[in-house]
Image (tube, rainbow over all chains, first blue to last red; front, side, top):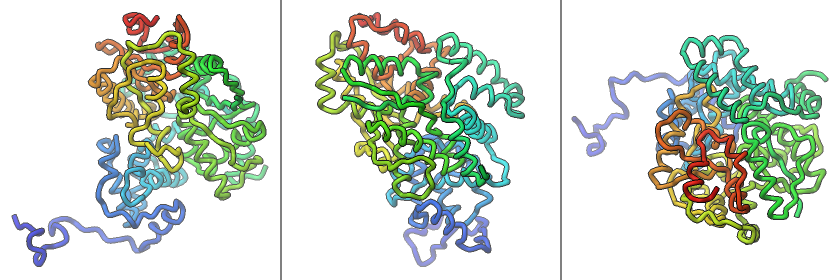
Length: 211
Length: 277
């Protein structure tokens, strides 16, 4: 095999068999938008893959953290928002902490998740997206989160219970809930915060509703 | 000394034992904890996944309440601590309109860092009745308490020390290990159980390899992940203690077995074998 490192004259930049994709006709619009909204210098990335190596769950991701940054540079918005990475990222901040160029990888992934949540693209990890929405709904409803109420609301969302029955994990989760109940860790009721009205008002205001 | 206390939602439910042990320990130390009046949820992962504004204004409400009391906030839950600090930083940037009167100038202290201050360590050493010198533990910090350092203020995020200092003050043999701040999987278990299991099992495995008989944590979510993953496992359980549970155990002749009933990985056999219960 031809060693391109030893012979820079004949080295080609990429494998000629590999299919190359064109940068979108919107140029660096997406890159600039993300950089402006998050304050992260995405262009500083030199693909050392430190983030992917630090990530505890990179093996479960379809687009690895360093690829996320590259795709942002290339402006591949749809592909990013359709990925499961943006939903399964744990925000453990390993990537951002160890990046030699101080690229906030976790901040970018989190921002993409927010963009995906408000876009019309169906989330790849539906369970997680529904869980986040349910959590926020419960929070707005009662000011504090009670695990039992949260899980009850989550399971009554369309398709969630059905999916659990189909993949056979329902029994296991029910047993877990019973164990926790027996151990006294699952409280069936909890005091609501008196601040519910204040929070509801603030929430409506952030959504541009008139209160 | 008086401090305002922000328990967070977990401490009302899943981690009720943590809450009670914190109150007991601070009573022993002679430090007044005043629960923030009418506190509300910090928004946790959901708020910062879905709406940046909500992730700033939800903690801001609690910061405002604490500012009214003029007491520094002490925060036992790592994620709450992280969210409060994040919100404080954003309030000072004045990007979003906050519906409550808040300056963000109050101090938000992570509970373990408060307890690991030299003066408090002295105080802890004075309170000890029964040193835990036969117990070998490793300390597990999780992610949100130490990272990102720009928000949490931990300079030693690679090798944090607070829990180690507190546990060794309680007399336990603290073992050094490499998985102090590796993520346990957090709330992803709701949608992708296999991810949380692979991460938590690996952490437990490494703790056992290091020779630990128990793990000391300070985060309610880390505790429940590491605890629940041991359900129906053939190996002898590795109990996951909250740091305050251990402290309280060393402060009294008899620990409170009521708290230990809430653990899935039963700590009673280990403690009995060591003559600590």
